[in-house]
Amino acid sequence: MTRIILPGKTIGIIGGGQLGRMMALAAKEMGYKIAVLDPTKHSPCAQVADVEIVAPYDDLKAIQHLAEISDVVTYEFENIDYRCLQWLEKHAYLPQGSQLLNKTQNRFTEKNAIEKAGLPVATYRLVQNQEQLTKAIAELSYPSVLKTTTGGYDGKGQVVLRSEADVEKARNLANEAECILEKWVPFEKEVSAIVIRSVSGETKVFPVAENIHVNNILHESIVPARITEELSQKAIAYAKVLADELELVGTLAVEMFATANGEIYINELAPRPHNSGHYTQDACETSQFGQHIRAICNLPLGETNLLKPVVMVNILGEHIEGVLGQVNRLTGCYLHLYGKEEAKAQRKMGHVNILNDNIEVALEKAKSLHIWDHQEQLLEGKR
Image (cartoon, rainbow, N blue to C red; front, side):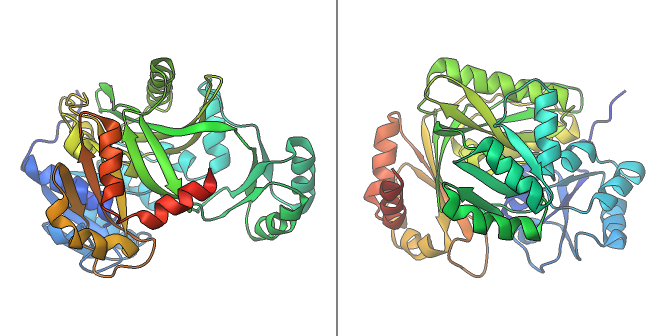
């Protein structure tokens, strides 16, 4: 018989960032208590938690303490010490397990897992030395992308090779870390599907989001995605296949490329709630955060229907003053701030969900606030 974690019990969260915070808020609405482990005192999640443990993520004693006071443990990001996760798997209740996280922590093993599930990825080569890099470039040609196999987020740890002029930068990156070289996918849209699977195997997928990045950081998510229904259903089907093949418990964000000729290629996976799913907080019957809590506690999953079209716009450090100055104009908008004390440039400080029956009107509303004008200029330059 599978375990059910009832409201009133304590959920331990590894990671005190905004994802942990929103996870905790959803859990507390359902009657759960929260313990959080994070190296930074008074982290965004700790601000709303019942118990705060301040320690590095690889501090096994701190992990053990978290386990002792928690009825179930989850995590909000990928870069967790695998040794600690294995300990939790053996000595505590970690329904997500350690295997999926271990696969997705390395881009090479992640690509292998996706291919094993029978799903398409960009052609790639493992690069562990300069000779392999030279061979990989010769085989895949230009354009292509060199990425470190571990670490790296929001565009960090990668080099785009458009011509021979970019090879030197690629060689420098290959000297620093193990990498993979990926053939460039000529995509028309970047999209994502977030799938949730409970301990008992119940599965739900949220509507597909169309994602627009600026400087490799997510700027906007548009839902429903402006792609064909056939492509949308293909993306949802791929997410369901991965949830089953990877024996998912919890949340999996599947980032994909949609091409003009009707193909979908899987780019990368994130085994946790995801930035491109923040729209679910106000536009869906159940949020990704509430759904994640239901999944790990083995409660029935909520419905994922889209209640109204939505544009989610990220608020970075450089936008926060503009947003606060426009609060009185946020009619039809739902503001979420993360409680971060210092507003740094390109640091995610919050997001706003703009709902409207007409998605173009919602996009125009975001533009009319003039908070993200710099992003709009960068987008125009990329097109």
